[in-house]
Length: 166
Image (cartoon, rainbow, N blue to C red):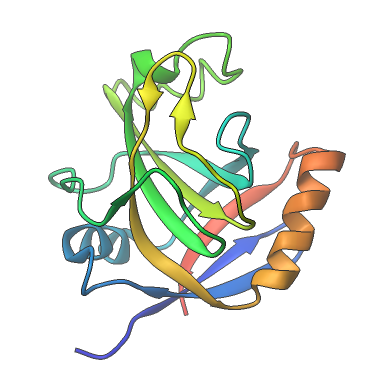
C-alpha cells in the first residue's frame, strides 16, 4: 500500500501543513480517519498538554479504534486521536460543555496536532490521557507552529481546524 497524506489547516489563517498517515503503526485509526475525511471544527488550544491544537468532533468510526501506537509524550508534528465521554469534557473547567455534546452521542473525538516540544498528556482531573499517534507532519510544520502560537496569543474564536485528503 502506498503512503496516504492529508492536509491539516487553520482555515481563517490560511495556513496548512501536510501529514503522512502512520498506517503501519495505527492501521485501524488511520482507516477510520481516512474514511471519514474531510473533517473539521472549531479549533481549541490546549490548557494542560501544552503545545497542542485540536477539534472536537462527533464520533465517526463504526467502532472506536483501540489504543494503538499510544503516547503520553507527543512530539512536534504528531497527530493524535482521543475519545472522551461527554461527561469527561462536559464541565465548566474546560469551557466547552455544550460543544462536548454532539447530537446526543455519549462520546466525542478529539483530533489533535502537536506543534512543539515538551508535551505531557496528563490532566489534573483524570490523570494520564494516552492518545493514538496516527500521523506525522512531513511538510509545513514551521508555518503551522507559528500560526498555533498566534492562535494561543491572539485567540481561537472564529478559527477552524480541518483535515482533508491531500
